[in-house]
Image 1: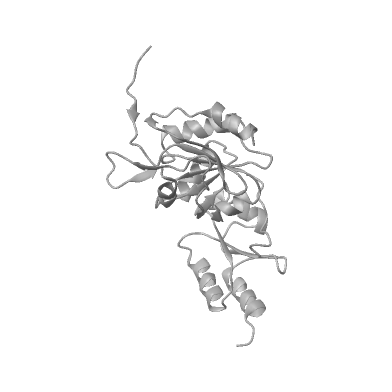
Image 2: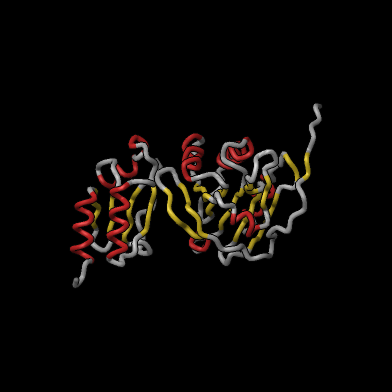
Amino acid sequence: MASFDVVEFPETNHVTAGDIAPKFTRPLVNSDYWENVSLSELTADGPVLLFAHPMDGTGIAKSTWVEIRNRSWGGGDLTVVGISISTPYEHKHLIDRHDLPYKLFSDPGNGVAGAYGIVHDYHGMAELQGHRPAFFLIDTDRTVVYAWVADEWPPSSPYNDVEAAIDSL
Amino acid sequence: MQAQEHASSEHPITLYRHVGCPYCERIVRVAQELDLEFHSRFVVPTHSERGFIKHISGQRAVPVLVDTHTGLTMSESANIIDYLRTTYGGDE
């Protein structure tokens, strides 16, 4: 079996299960338009699975969203949303290209990554920072009931663990 | 095209606009002048990707204004400005 180098991320003090998810308002993009939406508006309707990830053009962003789509996450009162530093135009492109029935928050200033403790420095791209791959399952009172943040690159997303967390809501 | 939620009671007045659209900016200025709160929804520049605008207004150009107070959807910035001044102008 071929081996590959796994690079570890530096330690981070990120939001974990039991914490209250930090509030934020950002443009939320769907396949037709985008508009400011706050996390609190979403949790008012039910639990929220927030998937933070690197820029939309990355393999990680694309392959994870395709897997999420293929596993049919979301529906019922669970809202699945994403967030990255990509602009609304890139988000719409990602949604259209991969037929994603999900909405994406646009956070080019990376403030939400800072608030959640998941800032990722893009080595080799001067001054560029984004979001580490991360899943946060957030309940209706904004309590984080499950959190996973990648600690190595490339990350291996814990799809089954996330599903188990969703099922236990 | 996904089916989308219509404007809720939280956002009775919605302006569909795109970045850098001078006609949209005129409406923004008039709304500010009237101290009128409204909610922005942005669309892409490409007309062919504006199926939702076509769906709600019968044509693909923005600005489009939706006002759930009066049940109105309208396009054409001059008409929209007229409507806002008449409906929300108050005593001047």
